[in-house]
Image 1 (cartoon, one colour):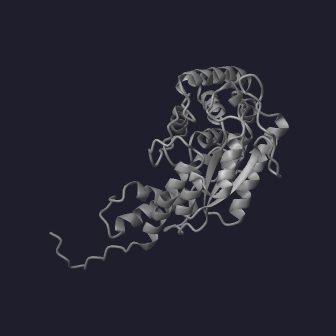
Image 2: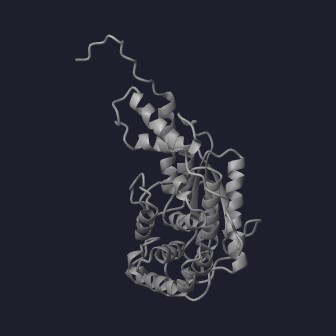
Image 3: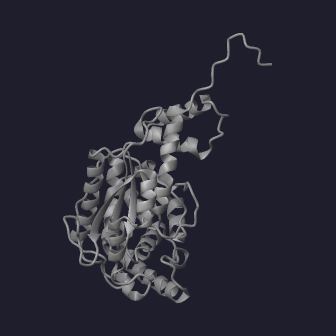
Amino acid sequence: MNIEFGPVTLPDENARAGALQRHAALLSPPRSLGRLERLGAWLAACQGRTPPRPLRRMRVVVFAADHGVTADGVSLGGPGTTRALLDALDAGSAPLNVLADVAGAGIRVLDVGTAGGSGPDHVRSGSGSIAAADALTEDETEAAVRAGMRAADAEVDEGADALVAADLGAGVTTPAATLVAALTDTEPVAVVGRGSGIDDRAWMRKTTAIRDALRRCRPVTGDPLGLLRTAGGADLAAMTGFLAQAAVRRTPVVLDGLPSTAAALLAEELAPGARSWWLAAHRAAEPAQVVALEHLDLEPVLDLNIRLGAGTGAATVLPMLASAARLLTDVAERPALPADADIT
Protein backbone atom coordinates (compact mmCIF):
# COMPACT_ATOMS: atom_id res chain seq x y z
CA MET A 1 0.00 0.00 0.00
CA ASN A 2 1.27 3.42 -0.93
CA ILE A 3 -0.51 6.12 1.06
CA GLU A 4 1.30 9.26 2.11
CA PHE A 5 -0.08 12.26 3.95
CA GLY A 6 1.18 15.79 3.62
CA PRO A 7 2.96 17.44 6.53
CA VAL A 8 0.92 18.38 9.59
CA THR A 9 1.55 21.93 10.79
CA LEU A 10 0.74 22.58 14.43
CA PRO A 11 -1.98 25.00 15.57
CA ASP A 12 -0.90 28.61 16.17
CA GLU A 13 0.37 28.94 19.74
CA ASN A 14 0.44 32.73 19.50
CA ALA A 15 -3.28 32.71 18.74
CA ARG A 16 -3.88 30.36 21.67
CA ALA A 17 -1.96 32.65 24.02
CA GLY A 18 -3.81 35.67 22.62
CA ALA A 19 -7.16 34.02 23.32
CA LEU A 20 -6.21 33.31 26.92
CA GLN A 21 -5.02 36.90 27.33
CA ARG A 22 -8.30 38.14 25.89
CA HIS A 23 -10.24 36.04 28.38
CA ALA A 24 -8.25 37.68 31.17
CA ALA A 25 -9.51 41.08 29.95
CA LEU A 26 -13.18 40.14 29.56
CA LEU A 27 -16.00 41.26 31.82
CA SER A 28 -15.74 38.19 34.05
CA PRO A 29 -13.37 37.18 36.83
CA PRO A 30 -10.07 35.75 35.54
CA ARG A 31 -10.24 32.01 34.79
CA SER A 32 -13.87 31.93 35.90
CA LEU A 33 -15.08 30.17 32.73
CA GLY A 34 -12.88 27.12 33.27
CA ARG A 35 -12.69 24.61 30.42
CA LEU A 36 -14.64 26.93 28.11
CA GLU A 37 -11.63 29.27 28.09
CA ARG A 38 -9.35 26.44 27.02
CA LEU A 39 -11.79 25.32 24.33
CA GLY A 40 -11.92 28.83 22.92
CA ALA A 41 -8.14 29.08 22.99
CA TRP A 42 -7.87 25.72 21.17
CA LEU A 43 -10.22 26.98 18.46
CA ALA A 44 -8.23 30.20 18.15
CA ALA A 45 -5.04 28.17 17.72
CA CYS A 46 -6.68 25.97 15.06
CA GLN A 47 -7.97 29.01 13.17
CA GLY A 48 -4.74 30.96 13.66
CA ARG A 49 -6.56 34.07 14.84
CA THR A 50 -7.74 35.78 18.03
CA PRO A 51 -10.61 35.94 18.61
CA PRO A 52 -11.66 32.89 16.60
CA ARG A 53 -14.41 33.15 14.02
CA PRO A 54 -17.80 31.89 15.21
CA LEU A 55 -18.46 28.33 14.06
CA ARG A 56 -20.79 28.48 11.05
CA ARG A 57 -20.55 25.03 9.44
CA MET A 58 -20.11 22.13 11.83
CA ARG A 59 -20.36 18.72 10.21
CA VAL A 60 -20.72 15.16 11.51
CA VAL A 61 -19.31 12.51 9.18
CA VAL A 62 -20.62 9.02 9.91
CA PHE A 63 -18.64 5.99 8.73
CA ALA A 64 -20.86 2.91 8.43
CA ALA A 65 -19.78 -0.72 8.09
CA ASP A 66 -20.59 -4.24 9.24
CA HIS A 67 -18.09 -6.47 11.01
CA GLY A 68 -17.78 -10.20 10.48
CA VAL A 69 -16.75 -10.77 14.09
CA THR A 70 -20.38 -10.27 15.15
CA ALA A 71 -20.94 -13.87 14.01
CA ASP A 72 -18.86 -14.89 17.06
CA GLY A 73 -21.50 -13.52 19.42
CA VAL A 74 -19.54 -10.48 20.61
CA SER A 75 -22.39 -7.99 20.19
CA LEU A 76 -26.12 -7.69 20.68
CA GLY A 77 -26.26 -6.51 17.08
CA GLY A 78 -26.74 -9.13 14.42
CA PRO A 79 -27.43 -9.24 10.69
CA GLY A 80 -29.40 -6.19 9.64
CA THR A 81 -28.67 -4.11 12.73
CA THR A 82 -26.41 -1.65 10.95
CA ARG A 83 -28.90 -1.24 8.10
CA ALA A 84 -31.69 -0.53 10.62
CA LEU A 85 -29.52 2.11 12.29
CA LEU A 86 -28.78 3.71 8.93
CA ASP A 87 -32.46 3.73 8.03
CA ALA A 88 -33.26 5.53 11.29
CA LEU A 89 -30.51 8.07 10.59
CA ASP A 90 -31.83 8.64 7.06
CA ALA A 91 -35.35 9.10 8.45
CA GLY A 92 -34.12 11.70 10.94
CA SER A 93 -35.19 9.65 13.96
CA ALA A 94 -31.84 8.53 15.40
CA PRO A 95 -30.32 10.09 18.55
CA LEU A 96 -27.61 11.68 16.40
CA ASN A 97 -30.25 13.48 14.31
CA VAL A 98 -31.65 15.13 17.42
CA LEU A 99 -28.29 16.12 18.90
CA ALA A 100 -26.87 17.36 15.60
CA ASP A 101 -30.02 19.45 15.05
CA VAL A 102 -29.65 21.04 18.48
CA ALA A 103 -26.02 21.84 17.62
CA GLY A 104 -26.90 23.17 14.17
CA ALA A 105 -24.60 20.60 12.57
CA GLY A 106 -25.07 18.81 9.27
CA ILE A 107 -24.60 15.07 8.78
CA ARG A 108 -22.81 13.19 6.00
CA VAL A 109 -22.96 9.38 5.86
CA LEU A 110 -20.26 7.30 4.19
CA ASP A 111 -21.33 3.70 3.70
CA VAL A 112 -17.93 2.11 3.31
CA GLY A 113 -18.66 -1.44 4.38
CA THR A 114 -22.23 -2.42 5.18
CA ALA A 115 -23.59 -5.77 4.05
CA GLY A 116 -25.40 -5.22 0.78
CA GLY A 117 -24.38 -1.57 0.63
CA SER A 118 -23.35 0.30 -2.50
CA GLY A 119 -22.08 3.63 -3.70
CA PRO A 120 -18.80 5.24 -4.71
CA ASP A 121 -17.29 4.89 -1.23
CA HIS A 122 -18.45 1.33 -0.58
CA VAL A 123 -15.40 -0.90 -0.23
CA ARG A 124 -16.75 -4.23 0.92
CA SER A 125 -19.94 -5.84 2.22
CA GLY A 126 -18.86 -6.48 5.79
CA SER A 127 -15.37 -7.33 7.01
CA GLY A 128 -13.69 -10.63 7.71
CA SER A 129 -14.02 -12.10 11.19
CA ILE A 130 -10.79 -10.74 12.68
CA ALA A 131 -10.28 -13.61 15.14
CA ALA A 132 -9.60 -15.97 12.23
CA ALA A 133 -9.24 -13.87 9.06
CA ASP A 134 -8.12 -10.47 7.87
CA ALA A 135 -10.72 -7.71 8.04
CA LEU A 136 -9.82 -6.40 4.58
CA THR A 137 -7.50 -7.00 1.67
CA GLU A 138 -4.66 -4.57 0.99
CA ASP A 139 -6.58 -2.99 -1.89
CA GLU A 140 -9.71 -2.63 0.25
CA THR A 141 -7.72 -1.05 3.08
CA GLU A 142 -6.21 1.51 0.73
CA ALA A 143 -9.59 2.23 -0.87
CA ALA A 144 -11.19 2.81 2.55
CA VAL A 145 -8.41 5.11 3.78
CA ARG A 146 -8.64 7.12 0.57
CA ALA A 147 -12.43 7.35 0.91
CA GLY A 148 -11.91 8.95 4.31
CA MET A 149 -9.32 11.33 2.89
CA ARG A 150 -11.74 12.38 0.15
CA ALA A 151 -14.48 12.97 2.71
CA ALA A 152 -12.19 15.26 4.72
CA ASP A 153 -11.17 17.19 1.61
CA ALA A 154 -14.79 17.54 0.50
CA GLU A 155 -15.93 18.88 3.86
CA VAL A 156 -13.04 21.35 4.14
CA ASP A 157 -13.52 22.51 0.55
CA GLU A 158 -17.22 23.09 1.29
CA GLY A 159 -16.33 25.34 4.22
CA ALA A 160 -16.53 23.11 7.29
CA ASP A 161 -14.96 24.80 10.31
CA ALA A 162 -15.39 21.90 12.77
CA LEU A 163 -15.80 18.19 12.04
CA VAL A 164 -16.91 15.12 13.95
CA ALA A 165 -15.77 11.58 13.12
CA ALA A 166 -18.56 9.14 14.01
CA ASP A 167 -19.11 5.40 13.68
CA LEU A 168 -22.16 3.33 12.85
CA GLY A 169 -21.95 -0.44 12.77
CA ALA A 170 -22.73 -3.51 14.84
CA GLY A 171 -19.66 -5.06 16.45
CA VAL A 172 -17.28 -2.14 15.81
CA THR A 173 -15.96 -1.95 19.38
CA THR A 174 -14.33 -5.38 19.02
CA PRO A 175 -11.90 -4.43 16.21
CA ALA A 176 -11.49 -0.97 17.72
CA ALA A 177 -10.43 -2.43 21.08
CA THR A 178 -8.10 -4.83 19.27
CA LEU A 179 -6.37 -1.96 17.49
CA VAL A 180 -5.96 -0.04 20.75
CA ALA A 181 -4.49 -3.08 22.49
CA ALA A 182 -2.09 -3.72 19.60
CA LEU A 183 -0.89 -0.12 19.46
CA THR A 184 -0.51 0.36 23.22
CA ASP A 185 0.67 -3.15 24.15
CA THR A 186 -2.28 -3.70 26.46
CA GLU A 187 -3.69 -7.05 27.58
CA PRO A 188 -7.07 -8.03 26.06
CA VAL A 189 -8.94 -8.10 29.39
CA ALA A 190 -7.93 -4.47 30.00
CA VAL A 191 -9.59 -3.18 26.83
CA VAL A 192 -12.77 -5.24 26.57
CA GLY A 193 -15.96 -3.31 27.30
CA ARG A 194 -19.65 -4.10 27.19
CA GLY A 195 -20.17 -2.44 23.81
CA SER A 196 -23.84 -2.81 22.91
CA GLY A 197 -24.65 -4.00 26.44
CA ILE A 198 -23.46 -7.61 26.29
CA ASP A 199 -23.70 -10.03 29.22
CA ASP A 200 -20.83 -11.89 30.87
CA ARG A 201 -20.85 -14.78 28.39
CA ALA A 202 -20.69 -12.46 25.42
CA TRP A 203 -17.96 -10.49 27.20
CA MET A 204 -15.90 -13.68 27.44
CA ARG A 205 -16.47 -14.39 23.74
CA LYS A 206 -15.41 -10.84 22.92
CA THR A 207 -12.27 -11.20 25.03
CA THR A 208 -11.39 -14.43 23.24
CA ALA A 209 -11.94 -12.85 19.82
CA ILE A 210 -9.69 -9.91 20.70
CA ARG A 211 -7.02 -12.24 22.09
CA ASP A 212 -7.01 -14.29 18.88
CA ALA A 213 -7.01 -11.17 16.71
CA LEU A 214 -4.05 -9.76 18.64
CA ARG A 215 -2.05 -12.91 17.93
CA ARG A 216 -2.72 -12.35 14.24
CA CYS A 217 -1.61 -8.71 14.60
CA ARG A 218 1.86 -9.48 15.93
CA PRO A 219 3.62 -9.49 12.54
CA VAL A 220 2.18 -6.05 11.65
CA THR A 221 2.25 -4.25 15.00
CA GLY A 222 4.50 -1.50 13.64
CA ASP A 223 2.48 -1.02 10.45
CA PRO A 224 -0.70 1.07 10.88
CA LEU A 225 -2.12 0.09 7.49
CA GLY A 226 -1.26 -3.53 8.14
CA LEU A 227 -3.16 -3.36 11.43
CA LEU A 228 -6.22 -1.93 9.69
CA ARG A 229 -6.06 -4.71 7.13
CA THR A 230 -5.61 -7.43 9.74
CA ALA A 231 -7.92 -6.35 12.55
CA GLY A 232 -9.77 -3.19 11.54
CA GLY A 233 -12.52 -2.73 9.01
CA ALA A 234 -13.58 -0.34 6.28
CA ASP A 235 -15.11 2.15 8.72
CA LEU A 236 -12.02 2.29 10.94
CA ALA A 237 -9.73 2.59 7.92
CA ALA A 238 -11.83 5.39 6.45
CA MET A 239 -11.93 7.23 9.79
CA THR A 240 -8.15 6.95 10.00
CA GLY A 241 -7.76 8.59 6.60
CA PHE A 242 -10.35 11.23 7.50
CA LEU A 243 -8.65 12.22 10.76
CA ALA A 244 -5.18 12.40 9.27
CA GLN A 245 -6.29 14.39 6.23
CA ALA A 246 -8.35 16.84 8.29
CA ALA A 247 -5.21 17.59 10.31
CA VAL A 248 -3.22 18.09 7.11
CA ARG A 249 -5.96 20.54 6.03
CA ARG A 250 -5.73 22.38 9.39
CA THR A 251 -9.33 21.64 10.39
CA PRO A 252 -10.34 20.75 13.96
CA VAL A 253 -12.08 17.42 14.58
CA VAL A 254 -14.08 16.32 17.60
CA LEU A 255 -13.51 12.66 18.45
CA ASP A 256 -16.48 10.65 19.67
CA GLY A 257 -16.18 7.26 21.35
CA LEU A 258 -13.90 4.24 21.11
CA PRO A 259 -13.93 3.68 17.31
CA SER A 260 -12.89 7.23 16.39
CA THR A 261 -10.29 7.25 19.19
CA ALA A 262 -8.83 3.96 17.94
CA ALA A 263 -8.68 5.42 14.44
CA ALA A 264 -7.00 8.49 15.91
CA LEU A 265 -4.18 6.34 17.30
CA LEU A 266 -3.52 5.04 13.79
CA ALA A 267 -3.88 8.47 12.18
CA GLU A 268 -1.29 9.90 14.56
CA GLU A 269 1.10 7.16 13.45
CA LEU A 270 0.50 7.98 9.77
CA ALA A 271 0.50 11.78 10.18
CA PRO A 272 2.55 12.71 13.27
CA GLY A 273 1.24 15.80 15.02
CA ALA A 274 -2.35 15.26 13.88
CA ARG A 275 -3.55 14.87 17.47
CA SER A 276 -3.07 18.61 18.01
CA TRP A 277 -6.11 19.13 15.77
CA TRP A 278 -8.42 16.82 17.72
CA LEU A 279 -10.66 17.34 20.71
CA ALA A 280 -11.83 14.37 22.78
CA ALA A 281 -15.55 14.95 23.34
CA HIS A 282 -16.26 12.57 26.17
CA ARG A 283 -15.07 9.65 28.22
CA ALA A 284 -17.04 6.71 26.85
CA ALA A 285 -18.08 3.64 28.81
CA GLU A 286 -15.32 1.62 27.12
CA PRO A 287 -11.97 0.91 28.84
CA ALA A 288 -10.09 0.82 25.53
CA GLN A 289 -11.06 4.42 24.83
CA VAL A 290 -9.55 5.53 28.15
CA VAL A 291 -6.31 3.72 27.26
CA ALA A 292 -6.23 5.36 23.83
CA LEU A 293 -6.92 8.87 25.14
CA GLU A 294 -4.12 8.53 27.68
CA HIS A 295 -1.79 7.39 24.89
CA LEU A 296 -2.78 10.42 22.79
CA ASP A 297 -2.59 12.74 25.83
CA LEU A 298 -6.12 14.03 25.16
CA GLU A 299 -8.42 15.06 28.00
CA PRO A 300 -12.14 14.44 27.37
CA VAL A 301 -14.48 17.40 27.80
CA LEU A 302 -17.37 15.45 29.32
CA ASP A 303 -18.01 12.22 31.19
CA LEU A 304 -21.67 11.27 30.59
CA ASN A 305 -21.31 7.48 30.72
CA ILE A 306 -22.44 7.35 27.09
CA ARG A 307 -22.12 3.88 25.57
CA LEU A 308 -24.01 4.41 22.32
CA GLY A 309 -21.31 6.01 20.19
CA ALA A 310 -22.55 6.93 16.69
CA GLY A 311 -21.46 10.54 17.17
CA THR A 312 -23.78 11.23 20.10
CA GLY A 313 -21.15 12.32 22.61
CA ALA A 314 -19.34 14.53 20.11
CA ALA A 315 -22.58 16.15 18.96
CA THR A 316 -23.34 16.97 22.60
CA VAL A 317 -20.05 18.88 22.84
CA LEU A 318 -20.50 20.92 19.63
CA PRO A 319 -22.72 23.60 21.26
CA MET A 320 -20.09 24.01 23.97
CA LEU A 321 -17.44 24.51 21.30
CA ALA A 322 -19.57 27.08 19.49
CA SER A 323 -20.22 28.86 22.81
CA ALA A 324 -16.49 28.95 23.58
CA ALA A 325 -15.87 30.81 20.32
CA ARG A 326 -18.72 33.27 20.92
CA LEU A 327 -17.49 34.10 24.41
CA LEU A 328 -14.29 35.41 22.86
CA THR A 329 -16.08 37.45 20.21
CA ASP A 330 -19.18 38.75 21.97
CA VAL A 331 -18.37 39.34 25.65
CA ALA A 332 -17.37 42.90 26.50
CA GLU A 333 -14.00 43.76 27.96
CA ARG A 334 -13.64 45.27 31.40
CA PRO A 335 -13.42 49.05 31.26
CA ALA A 336 -9.94 50.41 31.74
CA LEU A 337 -9.28 52.13 35.03
CA PRO A 338 -8.36 55.83 34.92
CA ALA A 339 -4.64 56.45 35.16
CA ASP A 340 -5.08 58.27 38.50
CA ALA A 341 -7.49 55.70 39.98
CA ASP A 342 -6.85 54.79 43.62
CA ILE A 343 -7.14 51.00 43.85
CA THR A 344 -5.70 50.72 47.36
